[in-house]
Picture 1 (cartoon, rainbow, N blue to C red):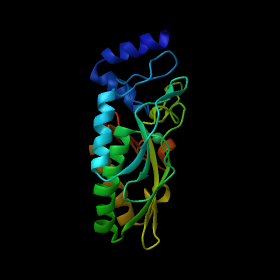
Picture 2 (cartoon, rainbow, N blue to C red):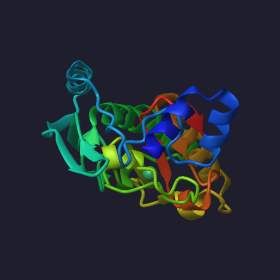
Picture 3 (cartoon, rainbow, N blue to C red):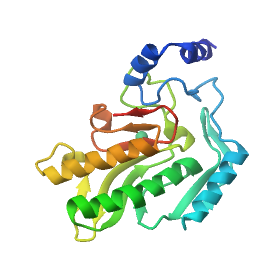
Length: 224
Ligand SMILES: [Zn+2]
């Protein structure tokens, strides 16, 4: 109850307060927490249907997954299992359709061309740390009791990019490493992600994101 009231109050808070909360949180305020007592956020049936048809139109191969509650504040609603987006991807589980659509477009239209342009290599694989996980936000003491976007399968964590010539461009090591083209490439793909996802968190955000980019299809407009 206390938490619900608190969330409602946050909805009404001014932008300054919103900013302050977002700085401290992996799940920005203004979005239902889906935590204990809060209803899990769900896309409408129409939203999902449109998204599935968008996904098909891009040539993506996927399997639509059944809706289900998976735990307190956790669920998979309007999710898919991506089978082929044109580039091999490791580690993906259930993904909300809107998240999957943004992710596929980012890989094909932003990451792959940037690899050619900036690194002179063809993108061969993307390694992730996964998409769905029934868990709370990590790396923020203030929001440790809030559910992560992963709890609704609405986020994916990107660990590394493999090129056809064998190079592996990892967020860990690459973000602050010696190689300038690698650093530039990683920042370029982050910037591109910020145009497609509502929340993008990189090593610039906090230590919990030192080894991955968190890409979440909400409407928070938070890019760091
Ligand atoms: Zn994440």
